[in-house]
Amino acid sequence: MLLKTLREEKLVFGITEYVRIHLGQKFVESPAISLSVLYKDISNSVPLIFVLSAGSDPFGAFHRFATDMGYQERILSISLGQGQGPVAEKLIETGKNNGSWVFLQNCHLATSWMLPMERIILAIVEDSSKVHTDFRLFMSSMPSRTFPVSVLQNAVKVTNEPPKGLRTNVKRALEEMLDTFFEDHRT
Image (cartoon, rainbow, N blue to C red; front, top):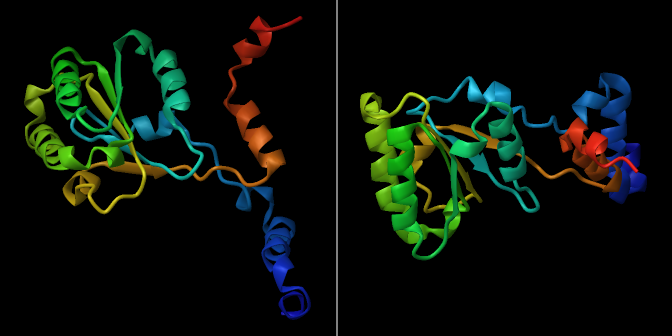
């Protein structure tokens, strides 16, 4: 209360410091997304939706995870926007048939395609026996009122807040780099 009364602009910093001192550093930092943990919760009929925030892009982490899992050659990806719906439908159909992983980026930009997307995904959810067991659907979207609620209800959702401050940004960037990057770029 004293901090709020004397220096209101320092209140958030003060609370953060208090939590760090009394509970530990892990309580003031956002944990990195563990796609291997999330992968256990999805299936050929349960998609994974990355709810985006400003400055976040999960595709790099997704691509590294797919490479680690041996799927780098079986990734089908499209950045959605106006007129990309039919292309996305073909990618989903291909993935359903051959077991590829499909990543639909920026779904919030394809507002006119939301209803067809909802039908396609609900058909997958309702009858996964017609879908290859290796098929996985990954999606990214900013929060949007037009995103189908039924798709959200049948998916695993994850959000990744961008780190605040230069130190945290650099730390997260270094954590996301592969050890092989440093080995391959020695001088």
